[in-house]
Image 1 (cartoon, rainbow, N blue to C red):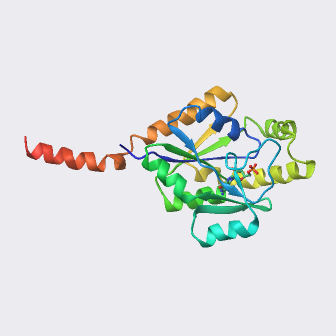
Image 2: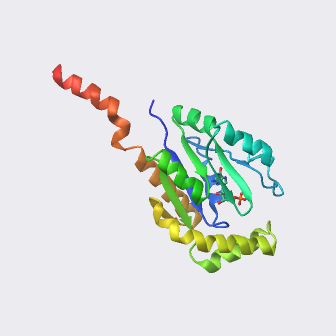
Image 3: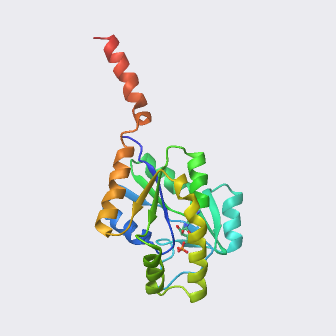
Length: 204
Ligand code: 5GP
């Protein structure tokens, strides 16, 4: 069985990453990694499903014990990706999706250059602000912080391999699926097959 791909999906807060993720994982070839975070749960969020909600001291222990692939601070809270689950799932052939912010994303790419890096952008800045306000889960002050953060992040979009515009949801989901599918054809995945092929040629 071939190993699955590691896929990083980032995007400005409110761009609709969560919705895209939920659509993707309807298909069980994709597995979503569950991050640890020190931020408080939003209404309806479930511990162990949306995030592992942890205290700052427990988060620090995860870092000390080298249990995270990456971690970063984002508008005042810590977020990190637990290592073991991600690697186990990839070994089982699943494409593992990390929905993480840019600092952590670039860290993952540095450690694992074959990571498929996808950035989701909104059709316009106005649409982004409207979506954040409609979501209603953040205070006005938090929305403001997230928009300022989006402005900062815009410069780094080019560090990603691919950009997908989330204008039409179905189309955006299909675009992400297509990009992940492409990664299954990387030559590095065929190293063992090619060794066998060389041997077979010799024995012809
Ligand atoms: P939110 O508070 O809206 O759930 O997430 C805030 C930001 O943190 C989002 O950009 C999200 O993608 C990012 N994030 C979630 N989990 C992780 C993680 O494990 N590591 C990093 N670096 N960022 C994360």
